[in-house]
Figure 1: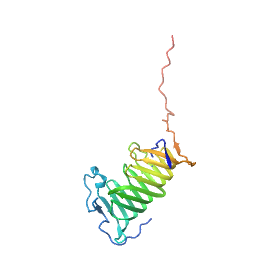
Figure 2 (figure 1 turned 90 degrees about the vertical axis):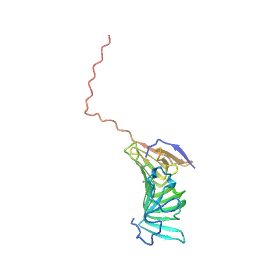
Figure 3 (figure 1 turned 60 degrees about the vertical axis):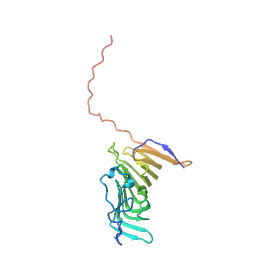
Figure 4 (figure 1 turned 30 degrees about the horizontal axis):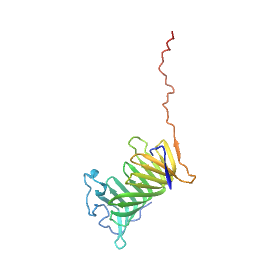
Length: 240
């Protein structure tokens, strides 16, 4: 089992679509699905509304629905709820009941997370639970993460073969060739967990393995005083 080891937080960073086909069901192409499943519009007070009560918007170029197998396929799809958004070239869903469903996204996957977080990958599996986006698992070579930090012009960046974004605790878990950086410091290891709310990173290794956590700290540059004359100081007073 991984044993988390606290590490200095570098406060880090992540196909042509298939041709449109088939029919467009009631829940595709710009449909707004409320938690009760009825169509609705975004509330002006969405910012103060709990996530589970915000409508889920499904917008697609085309869709293919098989009601017998409950299979849903979308092309050039965008799914949004509040400030969160998932888009990709293609998507397949196990159902439009967002109380409990799984969506698989392929091709140019882009997920806009909270706190200006941003994930990009080749593929993603997004879990919807209790009428909200609960978790996203993205895979790529590599999958990429980026967050624009409010206290710095340097964004946090990271990449790994797999990134798991847990919406509930606001964490991004990077595994397999994981790397994080804040523009100056870097940290890499087999497993990195970054809290996008607290801007804190933890690194872990597998007990008994020879894997290590690597931290690279660049020295901060000092002000360049070359060519600048210092103010003349008065000579010391003679001691009596």
